[in-house]
Length: 448
Image (cartoon, rainbow, N blue to C red; front, side):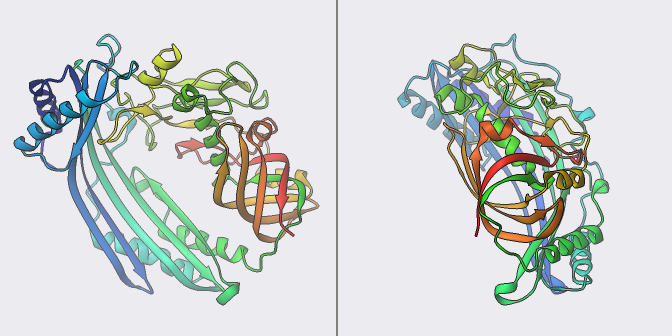
């Protein structure tokens, strides 16, 4: 990991210009990842990977092409550039393709304040193995747990650098630590499983392995003896573990790629109320120690905190340069990319307004309905917003959890669902999507 990624991206750009490109941008990523899995008190699988990935996008007028490789020898860079230029000359014209104007790019590229990198020493494999074993042991110590399907610990470290012929150059480093456990109770057809997994940028911020194993075990035991819920129309409470998926569907619908194609169920909703008036959705790419934070986007534009939905009203799309040009707007600094593809719009850290009630309060107030803790599959019509998903969780009777449920389907229309949201106050603030448990009124349940 000693290679200078800035020099590497500049070499790619020089090769692109020498091959005949009018403009180009380049990306280089190197990193190390280590993962350890244990089972029944012994090591089951250990994996370590190191490598460098590079990507180059070239533009010939309004034609573009992208190539990638994992070989950084000088002759490979020349071959990449020549191949990309040949591809671009054969590509169809795209009137929205192009780099940012030099006046648009930022020179604020020092991401130190975002705390995306843990300077502590890389944990050795024995340390990770010990974390996984402790999580497994804690889960097995809970009465009723019969086996552990998987207990794992992992560490990752990456450096990323981007540069373009318009003068932009910027990079940053990231780390992540993870511990997870999947516990099983029962046997045969009465077997149930659930999990707990936690990830942080800084290893010191992680919960203890014992807490992760215990939570996985308790969640599994809570699922024992499930039944099918009643068929009908009932309120549905999305547990905080899965509630962010609802806001994820909203984010997909206001993504510039969907809007520009006309394939979004919110394509004509700008300025309209799509959430209850008390709720807002904000994006803050500058939150410290948060996985989706970024000081600049993949096109070199500065990121900034902004409101996507204000007091229920849709106020902004999520745009990169290309989708902004298609819609006759300005980029919102949301470009993201990998080494093998051009930029596309993607949100950073998202927060939904929290409510004043606890999840327990919402369970009490919902009367009879479904508390969803796990979701299976997805059938979402991106144009109409029609929604159908498999779910499991707990049946609520008279404001109290009565029994676990599985094998049910919940259905509705996202526009109608989002307009009735009632949030709890239990969102986890370290996540990139800070979304509390959400109560949706009047969904259709298919069970018994």
